[in-house]
Length: 291
Image 1 (tube, rainbow, N blue to C red):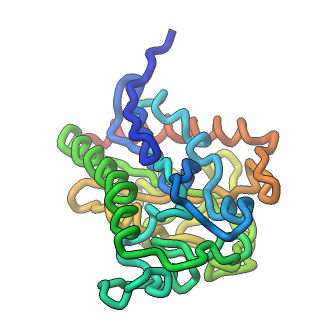
Image 2 (cartoon, rainbow, N blue to C red):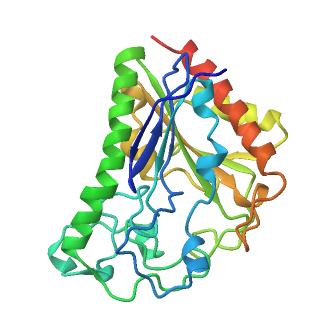
């Protein structure tokens, strides 16, 4: 009988599962798949439109990671409430009451409506908010959801680096099969998996090659920095010079789910098992890199 993993759960914020045995300096974080809607969440959009923004089922796709020695960390809150994969100042001022007094730094993501606070739904750009939220509400979302998640991820990475000298961080996401209107490449078809390292900024090429080679070997179409080069989850935590190697994996949703009905496809378990094999492969890789 296999040993049960230890866990930590902060309701509505994050769920952490530690390795079952033989821990590797490897963590999978899932920041944009949460479906625990806070009690104060309100939107004029249809619920299926709201769900279109969420990277559905990614936490399940990577759920085998702790069995192979990796740590698994999942943000429970939806990115439609506050997006953990955005910088804390990447905000469209029009979405915040009294925003002119705040030091916001909106990027292209905010201009597209999907910054830290989303203004539109991913699927059809339907308005997600009816009224601007207050600066007090923004601060609460940051302090009660966004920062606790990132602080937990930082603590895990720090402990691994102190213990092993290096740590390998995989941020797990999903993408529409055809780029949607909120993407800069709207209308373009996507590869099966896209690996992002912010063009070499957040990890060494060997780590990218370890992921690319394994998935390509299974017959998938795998690209690097083509659709998404990586956003805040790896920008904030990746620092290869100090021993933290961070990359992002985008999985094409059409591989494992019906993108219109949100139902899992029959191939779901195959994809989950392949990503479990990837986690085993990367755990072995990470153990070999300990300093």
